[in-house]
Image 1 (cartoon, one colour):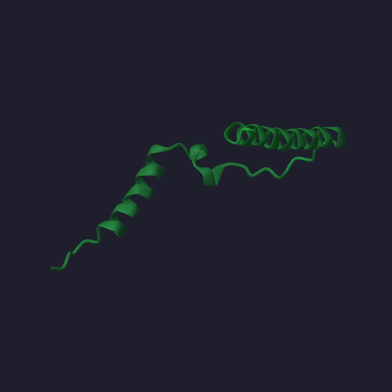
Image 2: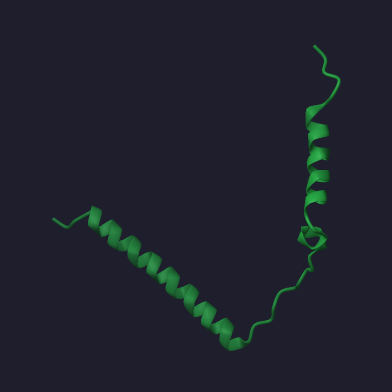
Amino acid sequence: MRHTDSPSCSSSNANHAWVHEVLEPEQLSSMKLKFGRRKLAPPTLALLWILRLYVLLMILLIGYQAWSAFHPKS
């Protein structure tokens, strides 16, 4: 049994056309401006690294507390 219309190709093209008709030009991602990475000041970078270390420490502490709760000392 052979189909004359390929639903995947025609529906894909129809979806793209419909999106471009419905959205305003500035709503399309291809029209948005691209910004580079922002340069952060050294105090801000230090604060972010301290927060990262704090999060890692808390993950380890919570992991230890959970492990010790499931393995009580006899």
